[in-house]
Structures are given as structure tokens and as C-alpha cells.
Length: 327
Image 1: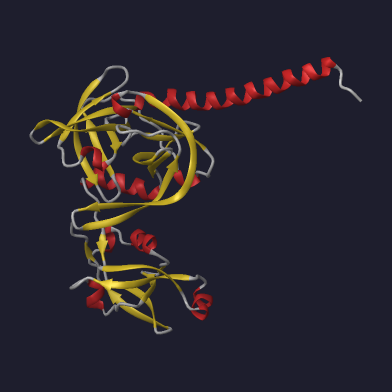
Image 2: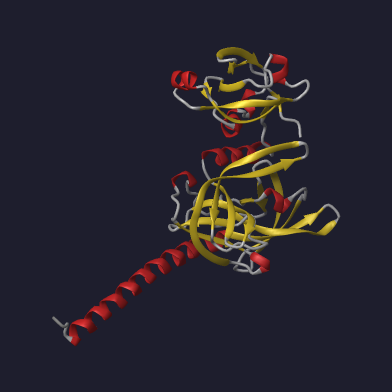
């Protein structure tokens, strides 16, 4: 049976229409997100202590009265600078607080009436989901690139003086990022900011700090106190599988092995030993460095906290008093 030419032609037209519809849906999502967010993304020019000549990057307005979110490495140790928007508005800003261990900073621009970007929840992202990056790469204001979430749950090492930390649940995207994009918005298809662009790890490999409950708490602390307090135990370690009997008893398979204890640290004073495996802290399960970091918040400083350890196949309970992390 041979298809009629009219049928073949109709099928080709339908295929073209389907392609156009798919392209239009993609373009509509990107352009809608861009139109919603471009007025909220500023280009930052940072003033160093000796005058102009500091760094540059992007920032996202998240309150109408002038608070902007950016990357800590963009503002570095600068006291302030200028924020320029795509409509030509230029406002001075002061650095309210910075947290290099999460690579986030909050600045406040003079004047109000700014367009605040809606914040989303990165914990709801899925691999393959459309994301849009908006910033000022290489000085080109209001630039938009699009891509997908390439991976979730990445880690990014951060350092502040002697202190180091892993930024968790970092978003990996293939949306094109270039110098100047740092501090800009990574948004979902509805124009909600789900990340702050932080690094270019390679061609087609950009990273963004997620917007979620943990980072919202950091932003709140920066707005209120200008810094983020963290508790400190003084252990160096990594994930280790638990013995099968203990894993079955606890209902989880891993713990945090203590590889090294820092001299004079709270953990050392409490009797923790190298080789111990931390399985619980303050009643919360610990399976790795990330779990420990989430527990070690400012409210833990100075508190007597129970810690559960696996030592020689048995569970040992100790009390530890964390101190504030010294940078």
C-alpha cells in the first residue's frame, strides 16, 4: 500500500507544527522567566578600601527596600560599591554581611522601590529541568542563557581564613556562565530564583548555590547580624560504612569516621578518639560531613550536646560542648 501524496504532505505539516509548538513552549518559558527577573538583577561594581578597582559581578534584589543577594567572593572584603540596573538606574550599596563558607553575601542599595525577584525552592528541582541564568557576564548587562539542571547534590569547597566547609546541594547546570555571572540568578521556568550562580567549573559546567531552607537561614542571619555563627567540634573525618549488625540496629548504613582530632578541640576534650564513628549528635543521625555541618549551627555553641559513637563495635555515649567556629 502506497501513501497518497496528500497524506504525506499533511504528516509533514503536522510534524513541523509539533516542532514549532515545542520550540514556542521552550522559548515562552525562557522569555517569561527573563522578563520577570531582568529588572531585579543588578550589575555590581565593587569599591575596594583604597577606592575603585575592586571586583565586579551580579546581584539579585530580593526585597523592595533594597536588599540584594550576591556571592561572597564578588564583594570580598569591600565595604560597598554601585549597583546598576538594565534601565540605567545606578545606586550605591553597602555590604550588610558576607559568609564565605556558603559563598553568599547580602548588600543593601540606597533608595527603595526596587523590583524584588521571587525566590523558589531548589529542593524541588529535578535533573533535566529547564533553568535560566541571568547576570552580567563580561560586563554585558541583563544577559540571559538557558539550559537544564545537569546534576543535583554537588559539593563545593569554601574557605574563610583557617576555616573550611563544603557548600552542599550545589546545582550543576549547562546554562552558559562566564566571569561576571557570579552573584546572578539561576531561575526555574516560572521565573523563581532557585540558585545564586557562583562558579564556572568548565565549558558547559556551571555551579549555583541553592536557594532552600538552609540558605534562607543564612540570608536571614546576614541581614540581622551581618555574619553567620557556626558551632565547632574539631574533628576531621569522612563517611564510613557501619558494621552490618549496627547498621540494622540503627536503620542506616553509614556514619562519620573521625580521622583526626584537632588539638584542644571540644571533641578531644569530650573523649572522642581517632577511629570513632559518629552516628548521632544531639539526637540527629549523622552519616557524613554534610549531616554534621547541618547540625553545627550557632545555637549549639556552649550547649552540652550528646554524641553517639561506634567504638570497637559498641555504641558509646559522650557529651560535648561545641565552641564557636574561629576563622
